[in-house]
Image (cartoon, rainbow, N blue to C red; front, top):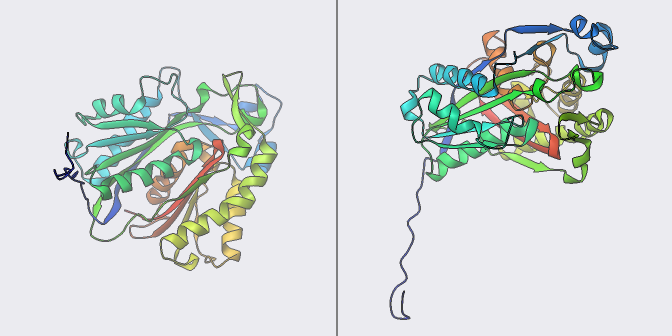
Length: 331
């Protein structure tokens, strides 16, 4: 206990590097491909009906014994290999997701242990489809604050566990997969400030029906996303000190191809380039919530549509309603 004449002890604060970047990315999907025609065998739908409304051609479903944690381990391991980073160099693991079977134990500690990240700071983060962008923002800030050295962020989802298989409004959309990024210090900024927020007054537009199945008011979410997400993306560009014309690649959450195209159209009307590459991974991956943005980026890089050094604008949005975006430099 101090007295009035005794100096109060001062806390020491850690301080990290001024900038961060993505060092490597990786992803995984289940082997089982489910086409629109496959779904038409179990519900009242057609290939053309699905393509016209959401733009999906096929998606991947995990087997019953393939867990969210399994997919997160594979994606995280691939991201580490891509980054050339050993598991021993990572001290924090964040797993954005909204489909773990139970609140405890969390996914992150299990994933860290299986990958070989010992005694890691490990936590899950639930911002639904905005989860990866939230996790990336947290990872960058942890490093810049000196709380972490290198962070592994893995968006992973097994949405088939929480989708009513005969609900044609939702069963046609959601799928499974995982995407990951290794975040570390950088001499030059490679991850811009996060622009995030929420619209809690719309919480009832996406929820768990009977605490069992995911449900969304499709038209309400569509109207909100097509009008509100482009301004959020523009704010992410502004806080990064850039102009829309600087953006090479747009990677929105892969919720619906019509939403993706509407966001791109609005950004181009405000100054984005006509040759800006726009992610359309939704066509062959479906909506994988927290996994969709890193998985789309990984697929685009593998296809040669994105190159190292490209300026990438990410923006996620989903249940909550939560949203987040940031500008990053592609590794």
